[in-house]
Length: 451
Ligand code: FAD
Ligand code: SF4
Image 1 (cartoon, helix red, strand yellow):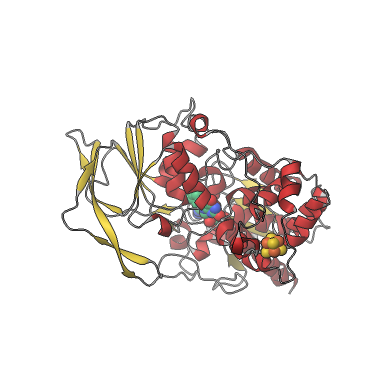
Image 2 (image 1 turned 135 degrees about the vertical axis):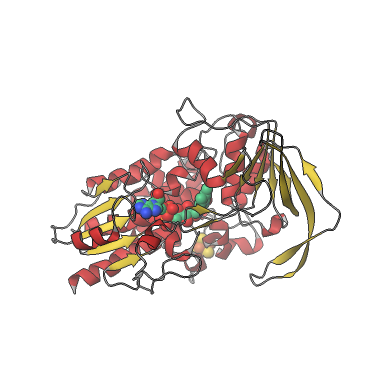
């Protein structure tokens, strides 16, 4: 049985010194060869693994026929951001996890094929339908807000996006690094919206510089897609020392403000960096930190590699680049010097005990196993909650205990005419789920406006 066609990448020793994209993409020959491995299973299990149900075998068939534009049309029916999702979706837990080819060998590289098609197709932007006189406001320009705006604008609505940062794209711009997702791709997606006459206002914080009440009086409907951008901390001693960052702050300085180049935004160039966490955010922070050329970058994670929530590819790339993984290890306190600068992090070794409510085995401390890592920078990558600025300024909106906005299956909130989706409704999740929620909300808003 043939193996999957390997995605070419930059050499690890070269790429760890630059911010250029790591994965280089399939050639046409690679893509056709990989597509030829597909068995075109009648039951299409891969489709059920895709959160937006892309007709995967159908687009793979078009690649085999060398008809890239038709393949892209099939992807676009379900997903707007093939170039983005082909690069960042956790396919190994979704479509590829269900692929029949994976039972006795390697699953079809569905994500790599999606990326190839979306990078190489030449599709025109649809002409929007005649203006229908309806006005919709969207809060946030991450994947969820962009997807909702696209579908509404196509149907003839007048759409206005309000974004609190000075640039659009949400996590796609400020969180995910250039070496995983080039920002030119995010620009292309935003430009599609501009071509559909979507108005975009940046530097507008809904709940502060513009109020929900104002939007309600000016628009027929609102979609809230403000994400989950509030970082969590551990609550241990030393977290307020100089040299401790949240991953959000660290990544924003690097990705949005380009602090690694000549930029007015500074970044601390540490000798030894410790990143705490085991998800995509931790991998991104560690790999960005490495590109600032310190001596060592450690990842401290309290469970084993098997439980790491990060994408397999990111863990693999991080290891290739030389990140030092301290698994089954948990920080106890951060140690500072007399100038309140980080000089070390005390950790304790862990072992796995019984499974917890999430089904994962709980880490348990091994008494007396404490040790100190000599680091001068600590980056906390422990996950994010929704930022409460909008919801606290508009308490009429029902939220749950973590601050997520409560929505029904149509993405409708507790208030008529207001919809919400993406990370603000689910908590920190994935690009594809956020995009899917935006599309669903657009369809619900169109129904609401019709009635
Ligand atoms: P966001 O992308 O967070 O966008 C929300 C936008 O709303 C932001 O631009 C924010 O500035 C704006 N906003 C917030 N409050 C207001 C306000 N009051 N007024 C106006 N604007 C406001 N997912 C994957 O699938 N694969 C990955 O590899 C992956 N890697 C990740 C790496 C990092 C570092 C992070 C942080 C997340 C990653 N994710 C990944 C998760 C994924 O990026 C998110 O699930 C997704 O971006 C959520 O989309 P969203 O549109 O709901 O919110
Ligand atoms: Fe092709 Fe795998 Fe889907 Fe079967 S499960 S149709 S082999 S991609």
